Length: 173
Image (cartoon, rainbow, N blue to C red; front, side, top):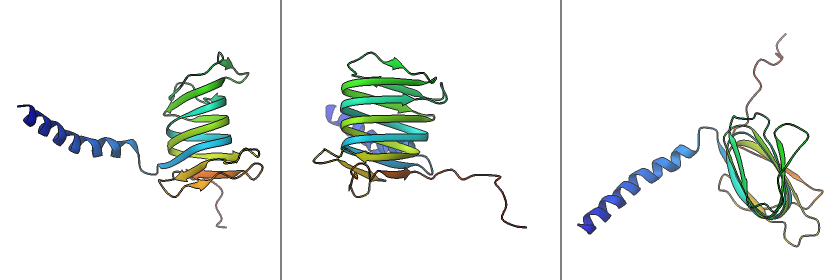
């Protein structure tokens, strides 16, 4: 009986797992991954989800449209400080973990050991710490890992299909 239950469970997982993974990404979504980054990272997303952690540093969370998604942060050392601008909160400490679920967002991280995965549509500004021996790596859409450039040679990387302007000026006479 145990063997039958195990076989049925494995069969269910084999069917359900690919469907669950496929549902995570919508058409036009891209993936940005960061691994052991030391420096400054600014990630802005128009849709999707993001999760990650930072060994040590400061995280500034900007939620331009409050209520269109959730921004969850844990593991910070100091009490979050609400910013002057609505929807902005500052966290700092060690082993800071964060997750964004849907909606527009902007995260600014300055620290060491930044690991992050963003799925959806957005852009990131990457600047490695000039004094770090290894600034870490980034990858787009599960591609080859690329070293993060040293500051001030920062790099803008886009992930996902960026929205196009609709109703702009026409080039025809």
